Image (cartoon, rainbow, N blue to C red):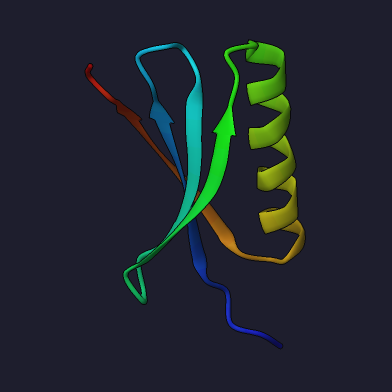
Length: 71
């Protein structure tokens, strides 16, 4: 059985209403940029939901972090 890891989805809310998605691995202190989405809320929700499902299917623990980026 593989080890259950924590996967943290990081959502940066940008000033122009888009979001920048990333994934942080707190065990190895590694951050991976996953791209910019939006500003359509439906597209953003779909991107986050797909990432969430993928992590859960792999059997990992999931956490979220949201950050608002000022101009």
